[in-house]
Length: 64
Image (cartoon, rainbow, N blue to C red):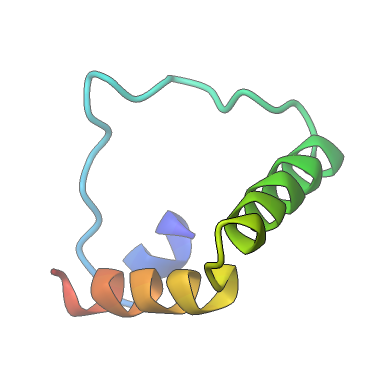
């Protein structure tokens, strides 16, 4: 996503010292499982994961 944002001219913050150098998942399948778990937990908490993601993308593209 950061590559796509850079190509669109959106400033992308650099990694922070607290962020891991490599993602904890080793494949797209593992990433998919992780995302599925996040969505499941959000739904269990009464939240709309898709709406939350759309709002985060909007904030990211606005630079806020």
